Image (cartoon, rainbow, N blue to C red; front, side):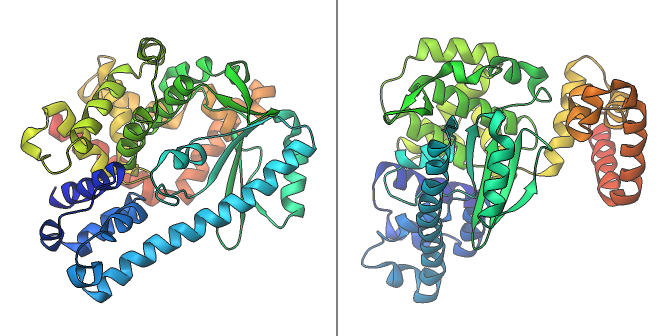
Length: 389
């Protein structure tokens, strides 16, 4: 985990506004470090810290190595400028058309970081009033965007060159995650919001509710295919941004089933970033070391293997093991629940009688189009079952 601890050292310097020790930087494997920073979407953060190397980053890293880091920084800065300008246009459209909306996740988190562009974003997530879904769709197409998905899930995805990715959400969570707890909790999310920046249409969550939402979103990914190291930085920076009502936060996270996850994440982020000079594998508690290893191996958007292993883990936690666990896993993959099928085949929500046909179509399509991934998934289950023996 050398590259992991080198990376969190630089992230800690970034979050606390301190310069890195040149002698420690010289000892780092820069190629491995840069690859990990890119995978976790913290390359700009690391580059901004390496700027502070003395006597200069060129002398400490070498001119070519520093150019590679500077490219990561400059790319993130350019993306942030373009996103901010484009997002302002879209939000002005929402305002002009009386559409209620709320910026989510990275759009707001980036404002908490010490420097502009430090918190990278691959896309912009915005919640909006579902009643205007078609109008927003027509507007985005007229503006030159391609709809990569529309009315297929709870968010519509739009892309336009060179870098513009926007996800417009009609809800925050589906019933497919965390036994539906997140969907139920946020069923009327607008009731939890407040006017923002002098607009009744632009909405925001309280600081506590924003923390809860970011934690719930991270937990959803952590419990599915994983989430990367950036989540520790987000957690740390939110907790340092102002006073929060932790009694309320803990109570609500307990309702969502995410309290244990968040407490471990809080403690881990404190150990990583309160004093970046001293953190080592040896001075982390075992639960935090396991979480750090999982985050490190997941990357910013997780890995497919984690999805399979976490599904199998949930079945085992229900009391099944061995062949029974494998049988339940296969049955649920072949015939997922109604909530999943509503997203896969929306017509089944209105006409449940079509559900058997939708299952058969899903199985046939997977057999022809996803043979390799199915084989890989079965291998993961087989290997996990062997380790269980």
